Amino acid sequence: MTGRVFRLHSTLELPLEDVETYFDEDPDLPEEIDDIDITRRNNTLIIKALSDDESISKYTPTAQLKASVTETRVWEEEPPRAGGPQWMDDEEEEIPSELVEFACFKGDRETVLQNSALQYPMFRVLRKIATLSEKGTLTAITEEDGELEATRIVEGEPRPASIEVVESPQGAGEGDGGVNWRDNEFISE
Image (cartoon, rainbow, N blue to C red; front, side, top):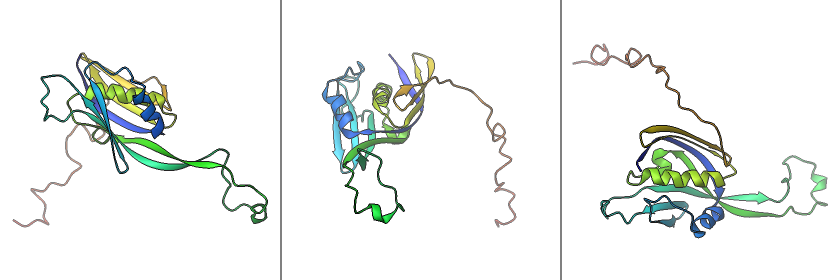
């Protein structure tokens, strides 16, 4: 099986605990991926593909998913609004909340899905993670076995997506909107 990722944009956010649970439960990984290595460096989560394929050199960096880890306060109820009447503060109890760490897969292909060896199989792993997310969107244009495929997952739900070829808004690359450096009067020879 072959595949490539041409474009990818992600705004996915999900609890770090959900990501860890997903990989702890030994999910079905694409056949090209033997195992997954998860590393956390400060506020960065790196999920790296491991392969037992002899044709991939041990010095070749395999594809990895990269997410930033942030702490967010999650309230059990609606949090109090700022600017409300001050006299109510004395009578109300504190609304229970907790700090939850979120894995945020945000950015384009080079930010979220790095390195080219095993990139398409790791995209398939990211696509599965996207279905677990309740917040954010994953959009991508990929190729598998010679066929282009559009992917769009919004808040965990796969949505219809299509690929449309449009004319470039710059006028098909004629270049008449830029600066002509050769004949610029402000540059002396």
